[in-house]
Length: 202
Image 1: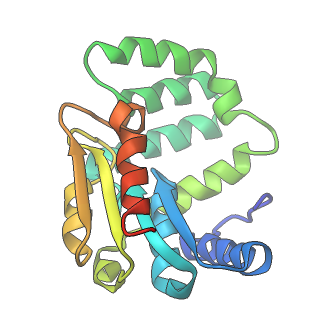
Image 2: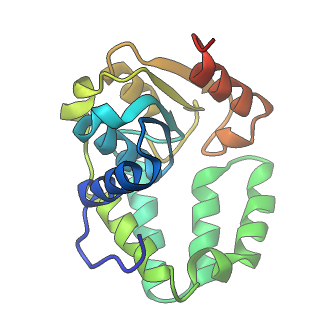
Protein backbone atom coordinates (compact mmCIF):
# COMPACT_ATOMS: atom_id res chain seq x y z
CA UNK A 1 0.00 0.00 0.00
CA UNK A 2 1.21 3.57 -0.56
CA UNK A 3 2.70 5.81 2.10
CA UNK A 4 4.79 3.22 3.94
CA UNK A 5 6.47 4.57 7.07
CA UNK A 6 10.19 4.11 7.62
CA UNK A 7 10.97 0.76 9.21
CA UNK A 8 7.90 -1.01 7.75
CA UNK A 9 8.77 -4.71 7.71
CA UNK A 10 8.23 -7.55 5.25
CA UNK A 11 5.79 -9.05 7.76
CA UNK A 12 3.84 -5.78 7.90
CA UNK A 13 3.57 -5.84 4.10
CA UNK A 14 2.48 -9.49 4.18
CA UNK A 15 -0.28 -8.65 6.67
CA UNK A 16 -1.48 -5.85 4.38
CA UNK A 17 -1.91 -8.35 1.55
CA UNK A 18 -3.76 -10.72 3.87
CA UNK A 19 -6.19 -7.92 4.76
CA UNK A 20 -6.71 -7.20 1.07
CA UNK A 21 -7.37 -10.87 0.22
CA UNK A 22 -9.81 -11.26 3.12
CA UNK A 23 -11.71 -8.06 2.38
CA UNK A 24 -11.65 -7.92 -1.43
CA UNK A 25 -11.08 -11.41 -2.85
CA UNK A 26 -12.60 -13.43 0.02
CA UNK A 27 -11.20 -16.76 -1.11
CA UNK A 28 -7.80 -18.50 -1.03
CA UNK A 29 -5.52 -17.43 -3.88
CA UNK A 30 -2.46 -18.50 -5.82
CA UNK A 31 0.50 -16.28 -4.91
CA UNK A 32 3.54 -15.47 -7.06
CA UNK A 33 6.30 -13.47 -5.41
CA UNK A 34 8.75 -12.08 -7.98
CA UNK A 35 12.18 -10.86 -6.88
CA UNK A 36 11.64 -8.45 -3.95
CA UNK A 37 8.04 -9.69 -3.78
CA UNK A 38 9.33 -13.15 -2.87
CA UNK A 39 10.04 -12.39 0.80
CA UNK A 40 6.53 -10.96 1.18
CA UNK A 41 5.06 -14.09 -0.44
CA UNK A 42 7.04 -16.38 1.88
CA UNK A 43 5.90 -14.48 4.95
CA UNK A 44 2.32 -14.43 3.69
CA UNK A 45 2.29 -18.19 3.16
CA UNK A 46 3.63 -19.00 6.63
CA UNK A 47 1.51 -16.47 8.53
CA UNK A 48 -1.70 -16.88 6.51
CA UNK A 49 -1.64 -20.44 5.09
CA UNK A 50 -5.42 -20.62 4.94
CA UNK A 51 -5.37 -17.91 2.26
CA UNK A 52 -2.90 -19.61 -0.11
CA UNK A 53 -3.62 -22.44 -2.58
CA UNK A 54 -0.28 -22.55 -4.37
CA UNK A 55 2.92 -20.52 -4.09
CA UNK A 56 5.34 -19.52 -6.84
CA UNK A 57 8.68 -17.97 -5.87
CA UNK A 58 10.16 -16.48 -9.03
CA UNK A 59 13.72 -15.13 -9.22
CA UNK A 60 13.80 -14.77 -5.44
CA UNK A 61 14.96 -16.43 -2.24
CA UNK A 62 14.86 -16.65 1.53
CA UNK A 63 17.38 -13.78 1.67
CA UNK A 64 19.57 -11.72 -0.60
CA UNK A 65 22.83 -13.37 -1.58
CA UNK A 66 26.03 -11.67 -0.40
CA UNK A 67 26.56 -10.16 -3.85
CA UNK A 68 22.87 -9.25 -4.11
CA UNK A 69 22.91 -7.49 -0.74
CA UNK A 70 26.01 -5.51 -1.69
CA UNK A 71 24.51 -4.44 -5.00
CA UNK A 72 21.14 -3.60 -3.46
CA UNK A 73 22.84 -1.41 -0.86
CA UNK A 74 24.55 0.44 -3.71
CA UNK A 75 21.17 0.89 -5.40
CA UNK A 76 19.59 2.16 -2.18
CA UNK A 77 22.39 4.67 -1.59
CA UNK A 78 22.20 5.89 -5.18
CA UNK A 79 18.42 6.35 -4.98
CA UNK A 80 18.85 8.37 -1.79
CA UNK A 81 21.17 10.65 -3.77
CA UNK A 82 18.38 10.94 -6.38
CA UNK A 83 20.66 9.56 -9.09
CA UNK A 84 17.80 7.67 -10.69
CA UNK A 85 19.59 6.61 -13.86
CA UNK A 86 22.70 5.44 -12.04
CA UNK A 87 20.53 3.36 -9.70
CA UNK A 88 18.72 1.77 -12.63
CA UNK A 89 22.00 1.00 -14.42
CA UNK A 90 23.31 -0.64 -11.24
CA UNK A 91 20.22 -2.81 -11.09
CA UNK A 92 20.77 -3.87 -14.70
CA UNK A 93 24.27 -5.01 -13.72
CA UNK A 94 22.75 -7.44 -11.24
CA UNK A 95 20.12 -8.72 -13.63
CA UNK A 96 22.21 -9.59 -16.66
CA UNK A 97 25.68 -10.52 -17.80
CA UNK A 98 27.41 -11.14 -21.11
CA UNK A 99 26.10 -9.73 -24.36
CA UNK A 100 22.74 -8.66 -22.89
CA UNK A 101 24.25 -6.49 -20.19
CA UNK A 102 25.09 -3.36 -22.24
CA UNK A 103 21.63 -3.29 -23.80
CA UNK A 104 19.91 -3.67 -20.42
CA UNK A 105 22.10 -0.97 -18.85
CA UNK A 106 21.23 1.49 -21.62
CA UNK A 107 17.51 0.65 -21.40
CA UNK A 108 17.43 0.96 -17.61
CA UNK A 109 19.52 4.15 -17.70
CA UNK A 110 17.05 5.72 -20.14
CA UNK A 111 14.07 4.85 -17.95
CA UNK A 112 15.81 5.36 -14.60
CA UNK A 113 13.58 8.21 -13.46
CA UNK A 114 10.46 6.26 -14.40
CA UNK A 115 11.70 3.22 -12.46
CA UNK A 116 12.93 4.97 -9.32
CA UNK A 117 12.09 8.64 -9.43
CA UNK A 118 8.30 8.81 -9.42
CA UNK A 119 7.43 11.14 -6.54
CA UNK A 120 4.63 8.93 -5.20
CA UNK A 121 6.61 5.70 -5.31
CA UNK A 122 10.27 6.42 -4.64
CA UNK A 123 10.01 6.51 -0.84
CA UNK A 124 7.82 3.38 -0.73
CA UNK A 125 10.33 1.56 -2.92
CA UNK A 126 13.15 2.51 -0.58
CA UNK A 127 11.21 1.26 2.45
CA UNK A 128 10.62 -2.05 0.68
CA UNK A 129 14.27 -2.44 -0.32
CA UNK A 130 15.40 -1.59 3.19
CA UNK A 131 13.02 -4.21 4.61
CA UNK A 132 14.33 -6.84 2.21
CA UNK A 133 17.89 -5.95 3.19
CA UNK A 134 17.10 -7.18 6.74
CA UNK A 135 15.09 -10.23 5.67
CA UNK A 136 16.32 -13.79 6.29
CA UNK A 137 13.66 -16.50 6.26
CA UNK A 138 15.92 -19.57 6.33
CA UNK A 139 14.70 -20.80 9.71
CA UNK A 140 11.07 -20.59 8.56
CA UNK A 141 11.25 -22.22 5.13
CA UNK A 142 10.26 -25.61 6.56
CA UNK A 143 7.02 -24.01 7.79
CA UNK A 144 5.84 -23.53 4.19
CA UNK A 145 3.39 -26.40 3.67
CA UNK A 146 1.68 -24.99 0.57
CA UNK A 147 2.54 -26.62 -2.80
CA UNK A 148 5.44 -24.46 -4.00
CA UNK A 149 7.32 -23.83 -7.24
CA UNK A 150 10.71 -22.12 -7.02
CA UNK A 151 11.76 -20.90 -10.46
CA UNK A 152 14.66 -18.78 -11.72
CA UNK A 153 18.04 -18.68 -13.42
CA UNK A 154 21.02 -20.72 -12.26
CA UNK A 155 23.24 -17.63 -12.55
CA UNK A 156 21.01 -15.29 -10.51
CA UNK A 157 23.28 -12.89 -8.59
CA UNK A 158 20.60 -11.60 -6.24
CA UNK A 159 19.26 -14.70 -4.47
CA UNK A 160 20.24 -18.25 -3.41
CA UNK A 161 17.44 -19.84 -5.42
CA UNK A 162 18.43 -23.51 -5.15
CA UNK A 163 19.01 -23.26 -1.40
CA UNK A 164 15.57 -21.70 -1.02
CA UNK A 165 13.92 -24.63 -2.80
CA UNK A 166 15.94 -27.10 -0.73
CA UNK A 167 14.54 -25.61 2.47
CA UNK A 168 10.85 -25.89 1.48
CA UNK A 169 9.35 -29.38 1.95
CA UNK A 170 8.33 -30.87 -1.40
CA UNK A 171 9.09 -27.73 -3.39
CA UNK A 172 9.47 -28.09 -7.16
CA UNK A 173 12.57 -26.37 -8.55
CA UNK A 174 13.02 -25.12 -12.11
CA UNK A 175 16.37 -23.48 -12.91
CA UNK A 176 17.13 -22.18 -16.39
CA UNK A 177 20.72 -22.69 -17.46
CA UNK A 178 22.89 -19.69 -18.37
CA UNK A 179 20.20 -17.30 -17.10
CA UNK A 180 20.58 -14.63 -14.41
CA UNK A 181 17.89 -12.46 -12.83
CA UNK A 182 15.84 -12.38 -16.04
CA UNK A 183 14.18 -15.80 -15.92
CA UNK A 184 10.71 -14.36 -16.47
CA UNK A 185 11.76 -13.36 -19.99
CA UNK A 186 12.33 -17.00 -20.95
CA UNK A 187 9.68 -18.27 -23.36
CA UNK A 188 9.14 -21.28 -21.10
CA UNK A 189 8.55 -19.22 -17.97
CA UNK A 190 4.82 -18.56 -18.35
CA UNK A 191 4.19 -22.11 -19.53
CA UNK A 192 6.08 -23.60 -16.58
CA UNK A 193 4.26 -21.41 -14.05
CA UNK A 194 0.81 -22.07 -15.54
CA UNK A 195 1.52 -25.80 -15.69
CA UNK A 196 2.34 -25.80 -11.97
CA UNK A 197 -0.69 -23.71 -11.02
CA UNK A 198 -3.14 -25.80 -13.03
CA UNK A 199 -1.88 -29.31 -12.34
CA UNK A 200 -4.62 -31.43 -10.83
CA UNK A 201 -7.26 -28.86 -11.78
CA UNK A 202 -10.24 -30.43 -13.57
